[in-house]
Image 1: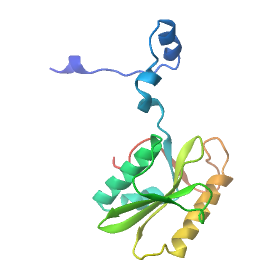
Image 2 (image 1 turned 90 degrees about the horizontal axis):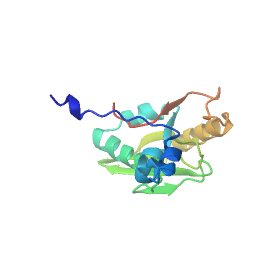
Image 3 (image 1 turned 90 degrees about the vertical axis):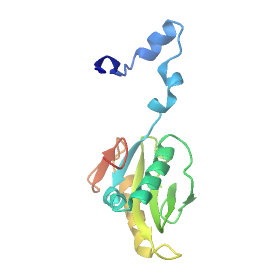
Image 4 (image 1 turned 45 degrees about the vertical axis):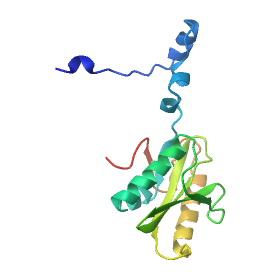
Length: 162
């Protein structure tokens, strides 16, 4: 029972042209969110750090990163030019304060540079230095996927919790 309700979704790269030839709108216009999601690239231990956040903070950070992946602005953020050009600090206010540094101005992906718990009013020098080092690592890596010998860069197309 219910097996007749299952659907296979197949993405055909040539389907848009065939749809237009038949006078229909291509799927990229009908379902734009399916086609315009940038992938996340976790630099260094940023993914492990976010997985160490409490569940509510992880959920909030994941939602904000998903907003960025789909081309929208996160709920609470500020630019961090001290870390690097285009680096943004996500602010997560759940119990304790949590921060996530990311850079989204590269065309191929969003790079999550650093994640940490903030315990004081000012960001620690060590966290800024980690963000700077990982930003330099991303910029120094080869352009295609920006994955090189500069360090560990882990790709993920989706969510935090598995």
